[in-house]
Length: 181
Figure: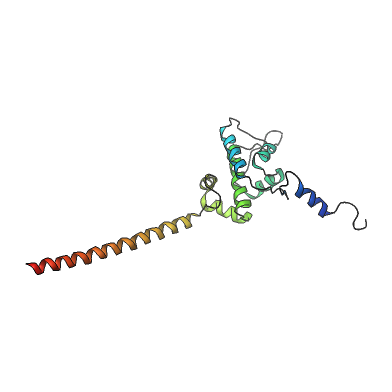
């Protein structure tokens, strides 16, 4: 087939990028909607439903189904059980984990390996707690410990300076009192 005829990758990509409300959607990556995610999380937590199918999870989280299936292969913590008909049945915890991955990979721009390492460093429970913090404010345990140590050393330095000042004032006062007797 001669060049210029048929569909080219450029036109397919242009169609894909123009889908929706002008929002960019390339290879399963949609723009992050913080308000929408927060509303969806609140709705999920309020729900009595135990299991969600992959299409429902995709709509809730804004992550395409093929991306969810890929993440299952990369992250052992995200392994939804399957029904007798081999459909994935996501639990609320699995969906929370999807939001965590979405945040780490898409918002904080971690690589797959970096996100995996971050989750291992923090532990799954602590990593899931990141969802309750504003984006970009998460820190590793070592960063938190270093900050605490720096703050405590700064406090110690100022405390020590105050003690030295009081000591010199007391010595001066003792000298004055000794001269008077």
